[in-house]
Image (cartoon, rainbow, N blue to C red):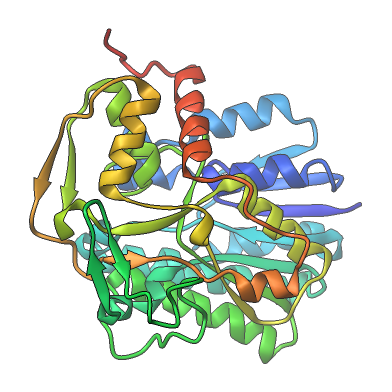
Length: 360
């Protein structure tokens, strides 16, 4: 029997992983204790999606386990042992702002939880492939030292800089920068996953993601920028943009494109490799550009305000250089630009069973 285990299975990337790999393995095991609702409130709950997966996928088994629970995780991984062919680790505390409120919880979820999973894999499923969703925040605020040029709707990198054509690559230093506490906990997990590949020879891959998004995102104010932006546009809820004249730029990768990258790694796994992953030059936007697109797609104006105080460690401009991954996996490419991604998010929000409270 071939088994895949997905942590954070009720979240955006986790649920997409469940749906995708459920078509390729005999059973998918999901781990999700709806910590997202505890972190961000009821609107961010993943219960609705976990229930939908359980109801609709015959080969899916859901477990309400905290990834920090070493005994429970060890028992679960031992149950399937060498039948486990894949572990996709997406469970995390994902917010800059929340991490500063409770650094201990942030670190134990992101760093200790990852260690618990790696150790269980090493003991019971050493031949599995381990895929970890890290973050571009491991680079701290180093990207803000790049030479940037202000335009009408965005900041852009100086066209003479080596990053101008393709974005930021994996050689950027992680050191001597302000990360936010969230960034620190993710650095610890990121390096752990690398080391279990390099030191123990396990088949591990780290994806340093830009903004990960898609129609299943339970977006909230502190996490899920495009999904929450579209939700606010649809519902009339006010939205606040923090700092950088609302011209800060992010690359955004649709969950379908990210899962396609996971699939490529599963079929041809590396050991301890790191890849920057995001929308790259094919899919990036500033806050001002994202707001304009949301308003156009939704046919409504967004009620937003500007707070000049930027968030600690927040990037002014970040676009991922995808060439390292594409060189290793030449069959993979970005298929969703920003418009197509936002159209999908809009459709997902409108179609959900949970009422959005839309106004006329």
